[in-house]
Image 1 (cartoon, helix red, strand yellow):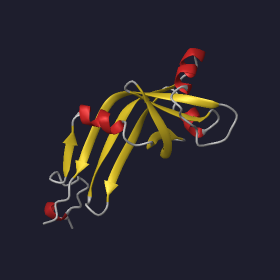
Image 2 (cartoon, one colour):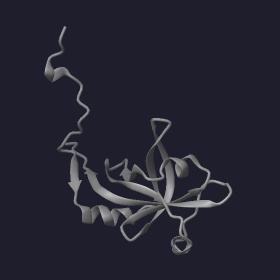
Image 3 (cartoon, rainbow, N blue to C red):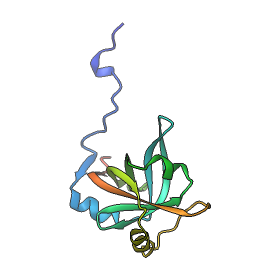
Length: 148
């Protein structure tokens, strides 16, 4: 028996509740929180990991243990990086997503410059890797409370 189209589940968010953000607002919001999530592929499956980050110009930079799954999986790969904030009492918030190619910084000069950002790795391990995400797509949404 076919399900009438008006009863099919919809996974699209209510367009009235989500307001698109322009790139300028997204760039400001990228400077406002210290923690984000990197989305990458590991063993053919999506993986999401929280990371601390910093901005170097418009690029997102994370610092992870060199032997970590993140460092191994994201080299020359397309990744997503997401930050957000949500206020439960007011039911408002926002989300910003960066999509771009990730690469590991290997040159001593680049690593020295990135060390000055004060970024710390969460994990322990021999050496750290700086991963740079060069934004190719930058998008964001603001969540508005539509309760009467």
